Image (cartoon, rainbow over all chains, first blue to last red; front, side):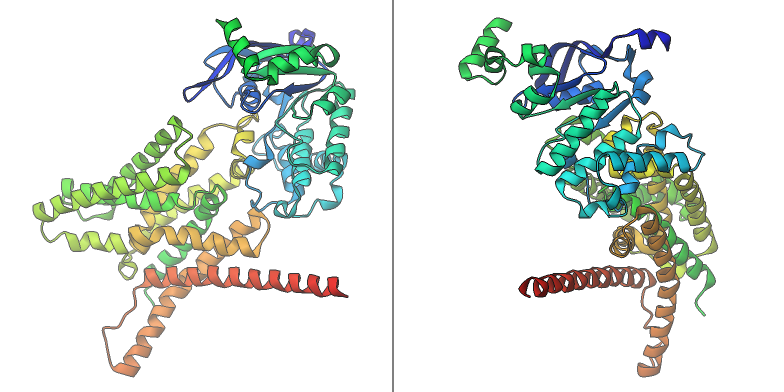
Length: 253
Length: 296
């Protein structure tokens, strides 16, 4: 435990390679994200961003490489990690209320034979308040807007009281009000010393509001402080024209 | 009065399928029951062909074993490529196993003539012939299922809503879904004498569908589905008895008994239809109110 706390990196990835079907989606990726950073993962569609997040939380088994979170493998440190999946992958017709979903985040801090207590309910309520949904707590999740759905998932992650948060495209199809509510929550999480990793598409938002960034397109292009990573040259290499990709290919060879 | 064993069997089947079906529907696997029940058919036929026994204990073991094989092949097909969508997988396994069943049926028909009548009662169900043994089998599936749901409730609700996220949480293990699926297979086999291979999955679907349109909570939905199952299970033998006496009175026909299984299913499907209709009407009313409000 003490050894884990000494580790200054929230997420350490070495030589990660993931193959899905017949395609290499993430190739030989090394990455270190320091503790307490608000980190954006940026890249074109199909660049392996979602796969990277899923590999970090062990949903996808990599071909090679290893992932350590707070200095330990995920299976040991999973209590410290909250994963927020893509909203579109879930069945929002599931019969549950907003509060039910937030409460799910508190479940695994309880042994299975114990019922939900006051403490768990308070945690869920606080998490809903943090994302501005406390008034909708009894609303069925099937009656939520896209932004509200995303905020419920964020509330569930908050209720997990984790140290490292991994969010897959939380700003996809979300209205301006929800976007600012989510961004405010993420910033405040960072201010409380949490590490937050977000798959993001809006380069302007990343440049303005994040302090750490990872540019990737199957391989890692660059990572580090936003000001040093988001440069025209790096962006061209990440999103670039066809020529850009060919250059990359030649470099690999 | 209807036979108490038949009545008890129907009530137990209703409760069991209300419970198991709620999980199937919540996991978007409404057709899984259909696949397993059709896969049970070759198991029944094989067990009869190999042992010659007509005892449900023996045939049921065969059905459950092949049902598990169907479940495993579904898992296996799902592992390969994401290009094969879940419904395609279900269709593949269902038709494959049932085709094998038809093949075995022909063999058994020639090797053990006269046994087909018995098998047919599993194909279409023969509720009126339920004995206490059948109800005991159902109860022994229902009780562990209820205990599992009671103990692992939080894990199971996470499994239904967001299985991927659940896997990233500390308490998640592979055992809970595996046990649930196992109980589903055994539960379906136990229910074959009530509704038969073809109709068993209807019970798995219509009870939770009705419950879903009546409630917005998973927990209360399951209770409604189980209660509805028990009610319809008690009602269907009564309906059969009532219609029988009406027929007898009108036509003096002694042989006009309706089959209980299909009556059960029809009652369930009618409930689903009515509940969905009511929901549509309520929505339309709200929309109309909204329109009136907008015009003034």
